[in-house]
Image (cartoon, rainbow over all chains, first blue to last red; front, side, top):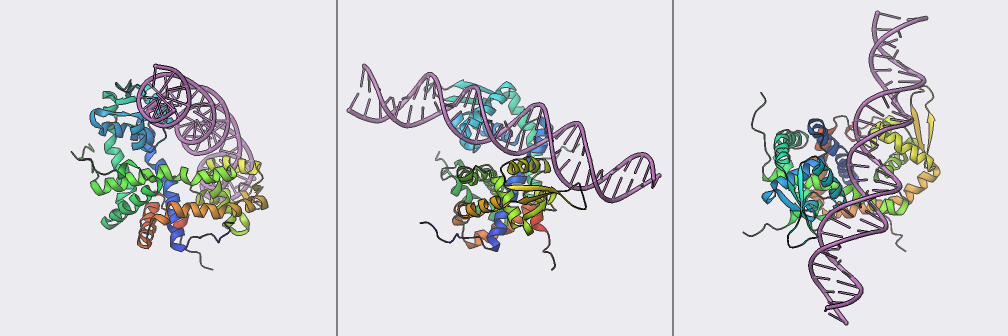
Length: 164
Length: 164
DNA sequence: CGCATTTGGTTGAAGTGTCAAGTAAAAATA
DNA sequence: TATTTTTACTTGACACTTCAACCAAATGCG
C-alpha cells in the first residue's frame, strides 16, 4: 500500500544530517567532561541546577523542571533523588495541590553552579560560538528553533513571553 | 589568577544554545522510537549497520567503524558483540595485522537495514527537513560542519574526498 | 455525593554507556 | 635481536536511562 519510493536525502541534506548526528553524539560528552571532573556532575544534573537557579525563588514543580530540561518525569525523579542525597536540592509538597512536588535549590547547590558556571559557559563558547561568526550564530538560532518546534511543539523555549 | 569576567552569552547566543541543548536531548529518542518498535534496534545500532552497508564489501575495521559512528571503541565493541549474537554482523581477524578486527554485515543484517531505511529516512525528513526551507538546509549544513570541526578536527565527514 | 478518570509523580527492573584495566600484536628503539 | 612502547581492541563493573507498573491526590460526571 504505502509502497511509494522513499524520499532519499540529496547531498546537502545528507551533509546536514551527518553533521547533526555527529553533534548530537559528540557534544554532550564534550560538555560533560569538565563538569564531571570538577564536581562529579553530569551535564543533565548541571542543567537541572541551572534551571532551578534561574527560576523565581529557585523553586519549580517537577513537571515544569522536566519541561525546562527536556527530560521525562521519570528521569528527573531519579536525578532529583540523587541531587537531594547530595544536599544540592530540597523537596517539599505543594500547598494547595498535594500531588505536586516542589524542588528547590539549596544554598550549597546555588554556590556549586555559581562556581561552575564560568568554566561551563567557557566550554560552550569554545565548542560552539568560537567556531562561528555572527551570521552563523543567527542562522543557528533560527534553524535551531525550527527544529525544536518540530520535536516538541510545546517546548518551553517557544512559549510566548509572559505579559507582566 | 584566571579571574577574568566570564564571557557570558548574549540573547541570540543563549537562544541558539538552548535550541542545541534541546535538540541533542530530544532528537535521538525521537529517531530511535520507530527503530526500536520495528526491529528492537537502537539508533546507534542502526547507524553501525548503515555505515557497514555503505562501506566497500560491507566490511570495516573496528577503528574505522568507530570513527564513522562517532563512538568510542569500547562502546562499539559491546554493540558489535550484541549485533553478532543477533546474526547481523560477522567478525574476523584481519590478515596481515592480527590486532585488527574486521566487522562485516551479514545478508540478514543487510536485508534488515534495507527494510528499515525507507521509514528511517522518512523520520529524519519529518523531524528535520520538513521543518526547513532550502536556505535553512544550506545554513544548517554549513554551520553543522563548523561545529563538527570544533568537536573533532579529524572527523571522517571532514576528510578530503579520496582521489581515484 | 460516589465512582471513574486524569494528573503528577515515584519506583524497580532491565538494558546501555562509560571508565579503567587488561591483552595481544605490531612497531620502535636500544 | 631483545626490550619497550604503541596500537587495536575487549572486558567487567558501575552508573544512568528507559520502560512499565504503580500510587495518591484532584477533577469530572452521572
